[in-house]
Structures are given as C-alpha cells and as structure tokens.
Image (cartoon, rainbow, N blue to C red; front, side, top):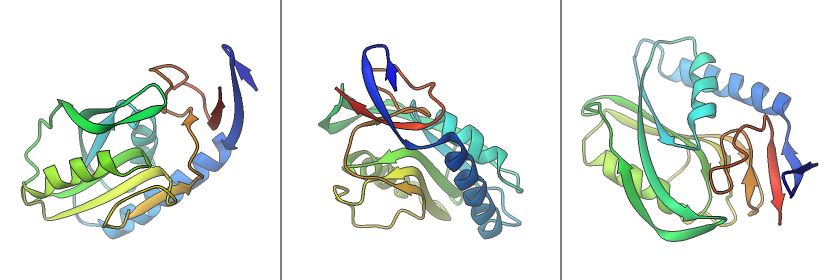
Amino acid sequence: MEFQGHRLTELVSPEEIKERINKLGEEISKKFEGEIPIFIGVLNGSFIFMADLVRALSIDCEMDFIKVSSYSGTKSTGSVHLLKDLSADISGRHVILVEDIVDSGITIKFIRDRFLVSDPASLSVVSLLFKPEIADIDFEIDYVGFEIPPEFVVGYGLDNDQKIRHLKGIYRLEQ
C-alpha cells in the first residue's frame, strides 16, 4: 500500500484489531466487575484504541487523559516530557493506563511511576501493541493486544510526525 509517499505494509488488520479489543474488553470487565475503574489514555496515540476499548466493556468506567512527548519523527528522544497532567484524583482508585504501544518502555515507566506515587487501589496497564524484543521494563503489561517486531508502525492512532493516525489497521512504515 502506498500513502502520501510512504510505503505501508499491513501488520494487523482492522478486523483483527476489533476482535482483539472485544476480548480485552471482556477480560477487563470480568476483572473489575462491581468496580468503576478509571481509564487513563496516553495522548495522542491511544485515543482511538481507548474509545473502542471502553465501548467493548460491560462495566461502567471513568476516563481521563495524560499527554507526554518522547518521540521526534520515528526515533525516541530517550526522555519523557509531561505536556498534560491528569484532571482526576486517582488515590484509592482502580486505574487502567491505556497505551497505544510499548516499545522501549521509557514512556510507560515514567507514567507508571508517576501514578504509583498517588497510591491507587490498583494500577493495570493495557497496550494495543507491545515490542517485547526491545522493551526494557521490570513489570508486566497486564493486557496486550498484539506483540509486534521492533519496527516503526503507524495507523489506528499511531503516527508519523502527527500524520497517518486515521488508518484503520496497523502498518509497518517503510521509508
């Protein structure tokens, strides 16, 4: 597939994404039955995934967002900058952190450590995509949509310099 001068190869189809999100919604609903967890999406990448995920739930929930920056183009900068903090108080709450992708682990570690200071009742991480070959984390990702190879991907909320987020599948970006 060619899109605005980029060659794209599909890694995960829209149908596979929908099916997996429905299963994640079932798992999370079962675990948090009787509770009202707060889902916290990491902007901008997680917004499409989080919208579909909360619609796949059979339980009630609240939502909030945090925004960080750790990429420039297709490369990690190696540091994380907080651009928008939470609005909600998460102390004593069941928190579900929603990420589009965990690759190096720098961003998820930063946010997870920041949230743990607030003493939530529980903190779970759900990520649509996970790159286990390069993730340098000392904790488990509780819910993973798909494990993928260490390649730069776009679509379904993931971007290349804020572009190509709207694609319905996940694609390898070939420069």
